Length: 499
Image (cartoon, rainbow, N blue to C red; front, side, top):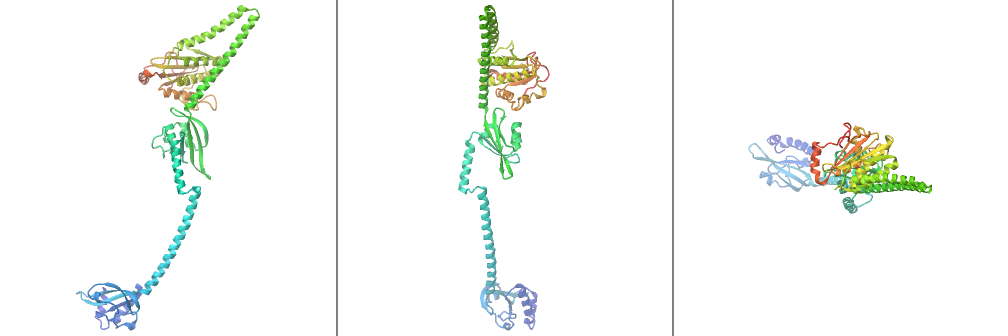
């Protein structure tokens, strides 16, 4: 108002009050103030809310305003204690012509503060109640989700959880409902050879065998399934994680059964040896009874001839195996398999050119490879021609241990050569199909190769070449260049594969 030209013009009017009083009251009402007083430099009022106070002197200090400064103060005037501001009115030359004071009573300020305080108090109370109810609901939900455990108990459980994950030897995987790996403990990382950034990646990106990848991605509950990785036999179980009707993923446990599988294979070999001895004992008893009966009938010459012929047959097989194979483990295995083949009605022949001295390879791996190949050939021969025939050739050739097993069974299709060494591939029915997979695994561990082709007998021919420790580098160079090929008559031109 002090800067309004209307105020300066009114000061030159013979009756300033007539112009300024309506103007000041209109501004006061619109501004929500208790008073606006325009006065001359002596403090005599031109305007006032109470017209009877016009012409009187302003109650308060005006000295700072006369000095040209705007100031505020609390002072008791005609309306009671009030907070007011006083400012000078200057003309174009800067001379102070009048003063303007605007104020509001302390009572009105207090009433406004009481209203604001009530509103603030009500808002605060509502906020406090809302926060209390929200805190109660959140804490109730947290207690329900944490099964009533407190923060200290949760922290202790987390520490136990971490310790258990690092301590257990079995592998543990957590896979969410989208097929992403969310947790893998130390055991699982060691068993599967997982990369450091495995957690958070989809199971199809972890480079695992297809059968194991399918299990992890399926989200199904499975129990004690056997899966093969590059050098391990794993027993895998999975269980769904559910909260009500909602699935949250699966928990997968892994147990290393490599050693157990090897021991099971050895136990199976021992069992078959025992069966072979039982069969041989049974046959020997029959022959002995025949000889005794011939003697009792007085036909001693025929008894001697019969006994001599039987002894010669058995001795020929023993002499052939022991003479050609001076490796005791392999020789014992071949003799046992020969007796087993005879009991099954299959003719098992040791190739005449077989010759083998001590082999500096792990006997467990050799038994796994040779035993499973012969078992597979016996099964195939029993499905093929009559009589079934199996040919076994073992020898060392150019610093490599070479095993060849052929049969006259139905053979192996060329497109199935690679799949034959995968876990679960079989032609023998449900629950089979691990023998050749173990062969492939053992050959891979020893750095060898497997060839599958057609045998001269009409069935399949499996050729395994294992580098001997002193010739590993040379053999790998020959495998790379392909300089060494199989001997003549070992396989046909079709159906070869090198898994």
